[in-house]
Amino acid sequence: MKNYLKNLRFSNVVDFMFFNLTLFLIFFAWTRFIFKSVTIALVLTFSLLIAINIIKSIRHYLKSNKTASLKIKTSDLENRMLVLLCKSELEQIDLFTSFYDKEKIECIIENLIIFKDSSAISVNFSQKKEPQESFLKTIYKARINNINKLIILCYEGNKQDKIFFENLKDINVSIYEKEEVYTKFLIKKPSFENYFEVKSGSKIKFKQLLTLSIDKSKAKGYFFSGLLIFFCSLIVRYNIYYVIMSSIMFLLALLCVRHKENPNVTKIK
Image 1: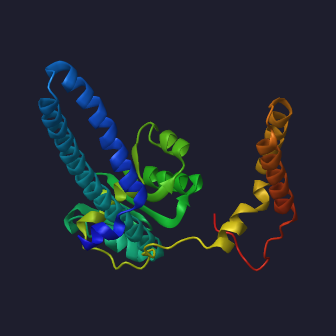
Image 2: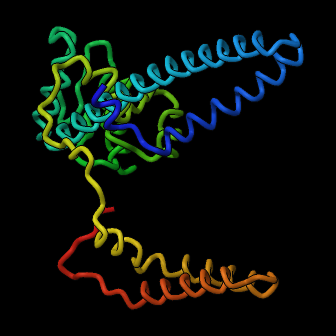
């Protein structure tokens, strides 16, 4: 109850009152029109309102649980994948070989685990965005070792590359990105230690927001937005709002152009 009251906001109370008042007026007007009795109309209207609010509360509860569960799953997925990226190639190979019976594995060639049925899996977690060349080398290596079915595991690849490689002749290639790697492999293992948990309730500071707002790359966007609003001010009768907004846009564009980045700070994209 304390947590509920703590999270209760004035805006939510207003929305609740507006929603119920509007429904009350609609239901009361129609029930009174149909049954010609104020008492019956009130009883039916309040019964409908209670039923609707109960259903709404149940749906909200189920949705909240689903959202919370999805958030936990997403957090676990990201943590496991980031930990996997940090592991050495040998540790990665050891991890994925543990999902198979040793009797089924014929040999391991670098990052390629080859099975006795002429299939193989390739472990590619040297970086987040796997380049095309990495896939090319992996598939070439599989072909010269007479592999007819290959599963490539990676964090993320180019979508067009994925379509191309999965449609090659004479070899069945499947590329598993982080979601499939998580559901088909990593979820079967006990939880990894959470090294990359983000602080809950962390907010962007005003200084950080200001730095992001006046980034040099945003100058064109501000300028053309200001230009559009400026031309609107020429045709609108009461144009003070447009004059103010266009001036702000042009000022932000100037600030972006004049803004100098800290040479000691490396941008993370």
